[in-house]
Image 1 (cartoon, rainbow, N blue to C red):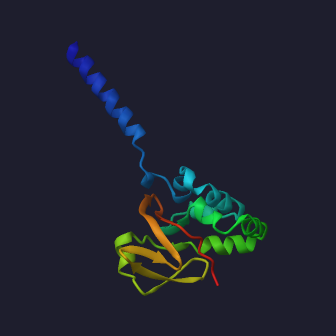
Image 2 (cartoon, rainbow, N blue to C red):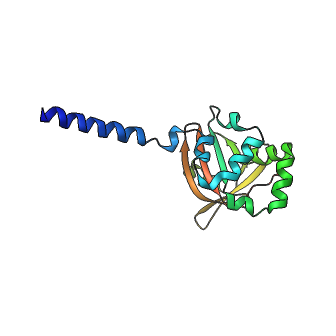
Length: 161
């Protein structure tokens, strides 16, 4: 009886741990970003631009995700103007997405090369003082694995030319 009780308790604990241990790489890019308090503006912008389904797609994609603080650097007036212009919003957001899964170790090897985004913009990848940069943005957190790609957190919004 004690063995059955111990086995049952152990099994219950294991199942509880397994169900609560859903990792980011089991969620897609959109759900992973939506689960973070740092990407509320980005997630709202993705919804406004109608890109949710695309970023939930098979991929794989690499997303350079600007934080709310990065968006706030633009200023409220600029953010409001961009959100009103859906085509511009979409162009800016797609400038943060690269086709394929580019992990930080791969990005370091791209030092001095250009990365072409899904929006058609190109940004130079650089490694400075051990930090990866894309355009004017610095990667502050890398390799957030998702079921359909990877997210790298950046400190500046990439604006295509």
